Amino acid sequence: MMCLFCKIASAQIPSDIVMQDDGFLCFKDINPVAKTHLLIIPKQHIESFEAVPSGLMADMTIFIQQLTRKLGISKSGYRLVTNIGDDGGQEVAHLHFHLLSGEKLTHIYKR
Ligand code: 5GP
Ligand code: ZN
Picture 1 (cartoon, helix red, strand yellow):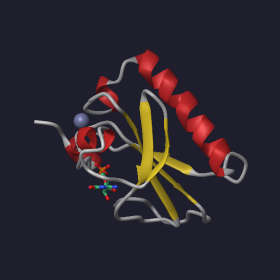
Picture 2 (tube, helix red, strand yellow; picture 1 turned 180 degrees about the vertical axis):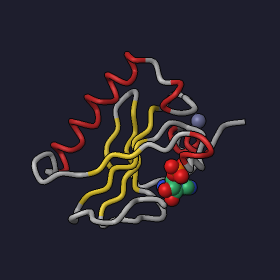
Picture 3 (cartoon, helix red, strand yellow; picture 1 turned 30 degrees about the vertical axis):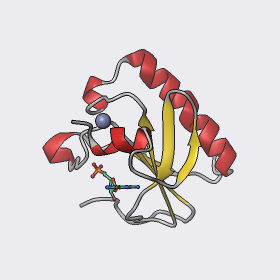
Picture 4 (tube, helix red, strand yellow; picture 1 turned 90 degrees about the vertical axis):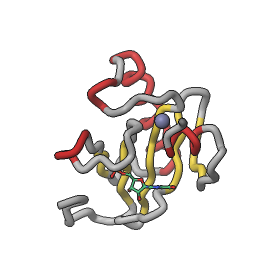
């Protein structure tokens, strides 16, 4: 059984795609908590940050840096959040970074 984000990565479930390459996908969060609220995932299933190999994390970092340049927010700034496990409030067990931007972020993302 594919997880929700594996289905999104393979386009079995539609999403608003912002950017993708062979390894990674950025799409809009369905329930935004900031003016811009995007999710960045590896296309391969990795449960959380706890399980990510360092090489894949390095590639993901490059992807996110390309994305923030494309969005024009590398200078103005943004927030990256990844929730891990029960206490971290992770609801989808497929590694994802929340990218929040488009406004001055004063609020806490999750409490
Ligand atoms: P988590 O709580 O696991 O860190 O974040 C999961 C995120 O996925 C939430 O912000 C939620 O709004 C988003 N989400 C859940 N289901 C869907 C969906 O079907 N499509 C999209 N685009 N986002 C989703
Ligand atoms: Zn998955």
